[in-house]
Length: 228
Image (tube, rainbow, N blue to C red; front, side, top):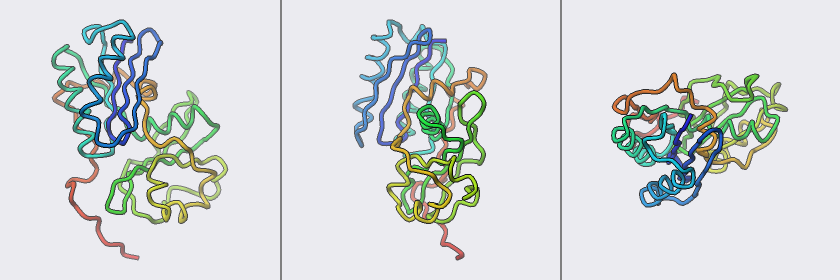
């Protein structure tokens, strides 16, 4: 398949094009620059790949969870491009893309991905390695406070790696769950090339049906106080 993948859910603005299993990627980690970077990166990746939008089979969207504004940028651009080229969009978890890179670069059997959600919370996803080597979600992605993650276990610590910038942003989260983690990966943000690995054309939807994974219904909503 010919696919274009984009993700702006984090500090990273990342784009990749796949043509006959050859991948061309552009990746920049610059906060608040996504609106300036994204379209030039898409044009450059398509040009290097030797194809145009009309040659694509679908667009792969890093669908969050992550930055509200960042997700809106990628969703809006993907919808506009898909409308213009009569394409469908394949939504892929941005957290799963991080887990996919960690599993590709390590022997991790479980990857716990945490991205900064602000308000002293993270967006959390936990993934297990499938026989294919790709991640499978073992919990519903959610907001997580800096408390014990019940789905992580010290018994699995040797095979569990933490990834994502959220662990660095909130050291207390790492300290509380340290007994259940073997190490902290330097993979902090999603890369579009790993979105491509997770893309399944059977999950493609019409542009109007894209629903970014905001998780927090109101951007300014404050987390509920802990009962502990």
